Structure formats: structure tokens, C-alpha cells
Length: 215
Image (tube, rainbow, N blue to C red; front, side, top):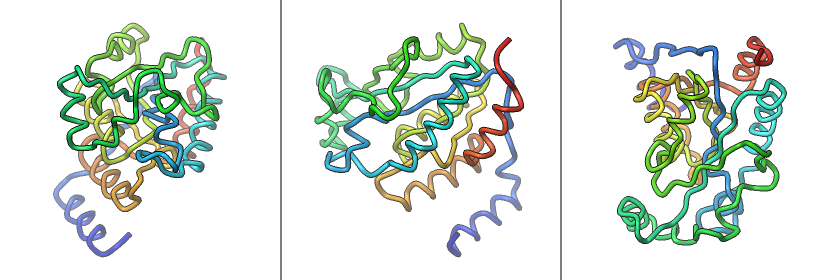
């Protein structure tokens, strides 16, 4: 941690930021935008996310063994969606995320199993323009464990919107990436101080093991 980060951490702690939100008893896993357009380093939106994929694989195994809900998102470029238009105006490279293309398919290394929804979104948050929240309510979810990309955009938006709707939002640090590593750390620092918890893969798996299988 650099000197500026340490100074910010001390300031936040002195002023009462960064308390723990903790876990509930009914978690869901959210895998944000781990599609080929983001996991392929050759893509204009992509970077190497090999270590993040390994962490997500570990979480997927535990969630599936326990029979707990798993959700994926894919970001699509839709020229007719007002929010998507504005998003792409800021990031023209998003236009590679064409509906039906390989770029918007979930990476094969962590592909969904039957019954695991892939939510199609046009903007950073999966709570906008999808039935994500309705699904969470039907399942009685109280905690959302968040992985994926990018920490500075869609992961952060997912966590803030989850918290804003009354869910405990937990970002699993080992399962989150960003094409700019420095931005990853600063955004996770900020999220942990203000919106939800940022935990290691080890701690997240420990939490899941403490719950055990549903039923």
C-alpha cells in the first residue's frame, strides 16, 4: 500500500468509515461480464484474467455443491438503448460487444451450468433493465458475492446498486480484475470504505463452508 493509500486509510478509520457489513445467510454469486470480449487480451476491452478465473472457479464449485444461486452478466452494445448509447460514447470499444457475437459469450473456463442465468445488460449495473432483483427476491437472497470485471466500472456499479437495494454486497478481491491494476486497487479501497466489504477468496470460501448446503 502506497503512502497516499495509507494516509487515506487512517483518515477513514479516524472518521468512522470502513465498518464491516458482514454476511447474511442466503448468498448468491454474481459473475460480472466475464465474457470473451473482456477475458481475451487481444480484445480492445480485454486483459489477462487468468488468476481471477481460477478464483471464480473455486467459488463456482462451492456454490454448486451447496445448491446456491449463481448469476452471470454479459454486456451488450445496443445502439437503440439510451443508456447503452451514452456508455459507448464514453467507451467506443464497447461496440465490439455485439449481440450474438463470441465477444458476449461467457468464457468457457467458467461457463454457466443449466439453470444459471446470464443477464443481458446495456449499462454497468445488472439491476438496470433486467429482472435480477426480482430473481433475488424470489430466492430470498440477502447477500451478493461479486466477482468479474471491471473493478472501476461494472463491478463497482453492481456492488453499489446491491447495497442501495438492501443486499449485503461483498466483492471477492481475488475474483475481480481491471485492465488498469492501479484503478482496481483504488476502487476496491473506496468500495470497502463506503459501500460493502472486500474480502479474500479464502475468507469468502470460509463463509460459505460455515453455511453448508441448502436444506
